[in-house]
Image (cartoon, rainbow, N blue to C red):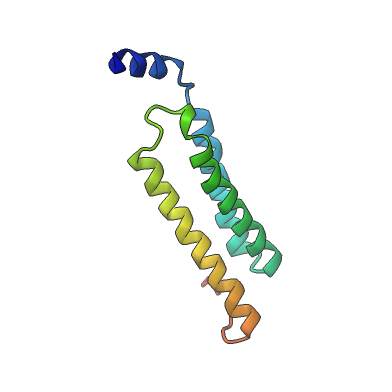
Length: 106
């Protein structure tokens, strides 16, 4: 019985390739922003974006089959690392303990 329900849910699951491509683009833009504009407002924006996307993954879990998958969790772990790094930048800059400027070798 539950197999029939899983098959029906899989048939109703939308193709998430476009959604995945969109989020991949957001990751690319995020990386460019972090490198190109090392400033507090950008870091705050990136942190908020990560929180929204991580929360959205779990909030929309019932739209996917399976609801939670290892690939999604690995991406969320990467996003959590970005969130932690941005948090560190924000805290380090606020305390004045670190030079948070990005140095790019040319």
